[in-house]
Amino acid sequence: MRILDALLRTDLRPFARKSFATLAPAQTFIDAWHIEAIAWKLEQVRRGTIRRLIINLPPRSLKSIMASVAFQAYVLGLDPTHRIICVSYSGDLAKKHANDFRAVIESPWFRRIFPKARIGQKNTETEIELTARGFRMATSVGATLTGRGGDIIIIDDPLKPDDRSRRAGAAL
Image: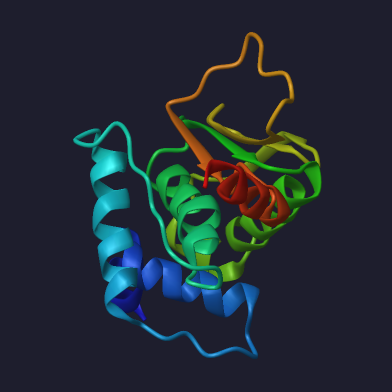
């Protein structure tokens, strides 16, 4: 168990796989090449060597679980003072990602490998603050972020699927 814990603490790819198993225990995780590529690029974001990253993949490719859930839990596990903002096209999707994030950081395995990353007093549907004052804030496109700042800002699916097809058609 100690070796697995060390691996989960040091490598986003197995951490994402464990997060997936927590969120979708009845589904099979397929560790394809793009999972390694996403994990590699997100690790560069975490280290600050990449400041802007766009991930374009078809739906159901684990982009959201990787970037909007697992990556953010991993970052806050490593440094619970980080401030993360996650933006989605709708409030409902933002809340779903926040609930998935909460499920990961409240899981026994996460609590074991990152004992300093604990939820503090602020634990709402859209904002989770840790005892070390870092946080994950979920919001939607068009919502107010005035006065808020983040070390990492993730924009996940900024357009509804219907809007994407209309915009693509209008551009033709």
